[in-house]
Amino acid sequence: MKYVESTPRNQIHLYSQCIDEMVGADNPVRFIDLYGDELDLEKLGFRVVDNATGRPPFDPRMMIKLYMYGYLQRIRTSRRLERECERNIELIWLTGDLRPDFHTIAEFRRINHKAMRALFREFLSFCRKLNLLKLETVGIDGTKVRAQNNVSNVFRRNTVEEVAHKIDEKIEEYLKELDENDAREETLELDREKVAKRIEQLRRKRDTVSGVQRRFAKDSNLEIVYATDEDARLMNDKGKIRPGYNVQTAVDAEHKLIVAAEVTNEANDKHQMEPMLAAVSELKSDMKVETKTIAEMDCGYHGEEAVLKYKDSEEFDLVVPSPKDSPKPQSETSVPQKEYRAEAFCYDKEKDEFRCPEGKPLPLLTMTTIEGRGAKLYRGECCGECAQREKCTRNAQGRTITITENHWRMEAFRDKMNTSYYRKKINERKELCEHPFGTLKRGFGYEHFLLRGLEKVRSEFSFMCLIYNLRRSLSVVGVGGLLMALNG
Image (cartoon, rainbow, N blue to C red):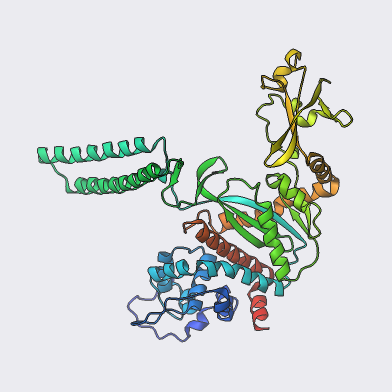
């Protein structure tokens, strides 16, 4: 049987086309090239090390294009980008056959991480010109992304000595094994090399642990050390506890573009409403959007201070359900049975007291404070003789209910969220917010950060969101539409 014959590898070719003809007119790399040329580098804050002697530096625009193309194609590390510059025809076209080494590529990102964060906002302005942003409705949500800090490099004060002891024991064990091999004169070079390499790894680990021990000795208040990325924190990501960051996005409902991106090392979203709405507000101001924006969040963002600040805002129509109405309501650890949670107790405004499901009173006991706000503490008087006590409370002094001075205002807001209109908005939020996270983490493979430190991680995440927005824009208007907008 005959097959299609290949061309001999040693045959000399005379190509009849130039490299520009190898890149199609609808290739996204053409937009990246033109967009990079149009950037105002001084405004964005980009800088480059100008060598006083020797070879001149690479054009920052070329380096920006390199990173944009790399992240769009899931090529993120400087070493992989270096290799692609040598063999990828699209990158050879984009860079003009320039081949920066991995150190140059990584150094450009290191010294320009703040400017690369500014690129995210710059591209949003471009999207606004294309009428891809409306800012009529935004969905806000967060997810966890792994940090550059393995769990094995997280040390606790009460276990670090044990870790150090185990490493020392393992080193001694390997050294003893080498001595025994020498004594028997049965040395295998390959085995010795492996053992020697393992000993070197353990000694480096021991040096790290020694540094951690010195830090614990110096700071008596320090309880945990993240040896690789000090700003990372242990996060619960779908049942897995590992060092990471809590990334936040605000997504515009028009075309599911990310309009605000932030990173925090706080494990939950309770304090993220204000910074995210402030970021959206700043964007609206820059783009001169004066219409009211519906801001949709889940119950994890529900906090009294933030809700009271924005619930009557002229700029935002706040949509955030109470944790009490969550499909997975937060449990009250002191309440054994859900039938006896606080919402089952009735309030008598005239007597200023609560009544439990058994009809027994909880009068006002004292005034107190919660997080700096005035509060009232109510306690049952008949709990000791109540037959349902074990279902209601574990408190030896009886069942208590504490409400802040803003309790009834919060309850009114909760009732508002339970109307049909807002329940519909609450249900729409998940579809709006989960799409970008699914694309970033599953589609693009951005499940961990390459950079270390909160500020650099923020820059990297903003750049990830820029690339997500670029991909969405390509899907909506295509390469031709984007090129026409630049040329127009």
